[in-house]
Length: 131
Image (tube, rainbow, N blue to C red; front, side, top):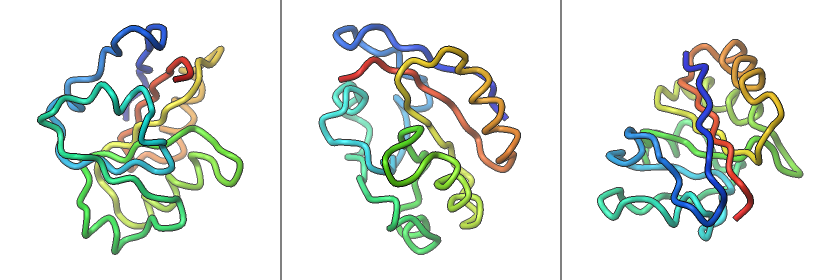
């Protein structure tokens, strides 16, 4: 269970990506735009991320892609991260779930609640300025 949040500098500054992400295997992005700041800063050694829609997430997709991490927004118009975490847990996903969000007033509380609700997932929260 991970209770740390990852803070971001302003959008024009490089993000201090976590080490696991710099040397990561396959990343699965759920409704994260291809031009997102995070993706522009991935190392060339990281395989091209797979981008998908929420509705596509299930055991078969996770088995086929075998992501080391799933990256998704905290919320959007149709679903929030708890919906995705439930799908991942029910599919026996055992990688990392990286939640991206605009800066939050008490991000550590959001992360603690997610970790308590989904103890089977390794969850991190990355706060990022828009971009």
